[in-house]
Image (cartoon, rainbow, N blue to C red):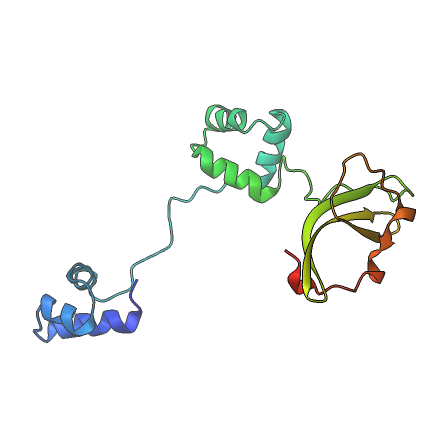
Length: 184
């Protein structure tokens, strides 16, 4: 949509005798746009929709309860009982805007912090530089959710049968002897 000043300029140039193609080239506007603006006499067109359907939010709430949240049944009842012709997509948009049928947005499930109830374990391969040599190791990390502590231990190879306990691991705050830029 062209702004009002450009529309008036196009209409005035046309009234002064300039052709549609010439206006189009000089103002970098398509010939179809120039013709449409001339047909509208340079005025901005009316943009407000007159056919927009407004449904009482309270009616939608009552229908939502009566139909047990089934939007398709709400659509049928609006057409049959209330004699309101509305598109299904418009109805579902109105339902979403009113927040009907939606559970409250929760970031995530809240779990109580219980000592020892939850921990996460991860094993990943790393390349650690010791002096001038690079050594491939397996880093084993345990994150204790309750205490928020992380423990790290490196192994040359990792056997799945190894039993990891917090006492056999090193707290991660003490492991600063390698350069993290060489971790892969």
